Every structure is written in structure tokens, then in C-alpha cells.
Amino acid sequence: MVAADSEVSGTRGAFVRLLTKHASLNAHLVLIPNAPTGQEMEMNMRMFRNIAAAAVVVAGTFAANAAFAYERWIDFVNVSDHGVTDIRIANLDDRRWGPNLLSGVLPAGYHIVVNPMKPQGYCRFDIRLTYTDGTVSRVNDVNLCEALKIVSNGSSYNVYPI
Image (tube, rainbow, N blue to C red):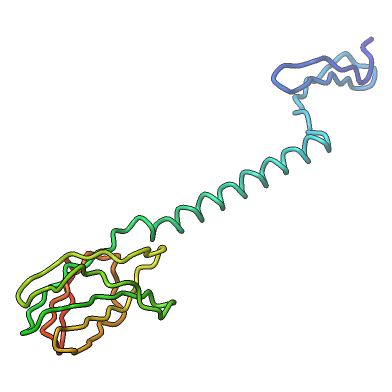
């Protein structure tokens, strides 16, 4: 007669338990997966938390770097009657104007491509223009993450995506 609950080792993380019904010789094989121990479950949860945390960090890095991936430049076209002496840019969160992006005077009828200094991941900027006659104009809330052309006649401007 076979013992009532004898165990036989199985393969692939399972074991086979041989069960018998009372005194009969009818045997039933039942495949029962090994349940993880408390320590194994804790290790699995720790691994899951670490993977989840890493996924959040990676997703956050991609989101943060998305703004850094944009090129920020302006094709500025001066169609006014005066030269431009000064182009300064400030991001919307910092109202301090950056340095003059021109190294000289941009004559009337000419254009220049300028890049903001240290955009620090920002896309939206205000732009201040100073003309040789002393006129100062502002172009407010311009998204420089889109390639732009700004055409200014001194008193007004048009912003075009390129």
C-alpha cells in the first residue's frame, strides 16, 4: 500500500503529490506549482518597485529632455527704415533680458539668424528690439521651439513658422 501523502520531486518548479483514496489503489497525480516563500515574494516586490521607479525616472528624463531637444533660433528680418542695434531675449519665467544677440547693427532690409543664450529648456520667450532711432519694440510670448521667422517694420511685426 502507498503512503497517503508521499511527495515526488517534479520538474520546472513544480512537484507532484501522489494522493490515494483511503485503502484503494486508485492514485491521482496533481500538479501543484511551488508557491513562493515570503522572502521570495518580498524580493519580487522589491524588484518590481525598483523597475517601476526606474521606468518613472526614464519617462521623466525623456519628458524633461524633450524641450532641450528643440533648436531655438529666430530668423529676424528687418523691413523697417532703421537699423536694429539690439536684440534681447528673456524666457517667460525670468523677466531679466539676456545679452544683446547682435555684434553690430542689422541694417534695414537685412535679416539675421540669432539663437538665445542659455535657453535652459524653455520654449516661450519675449523678444526686445532696439532700433537706431531709439525706438524699442517687443515681441511677446514667442515659441522658439518652433523654427520662426519674425518680420518687423519697426512699429509692428509678424511671426511665421518656417
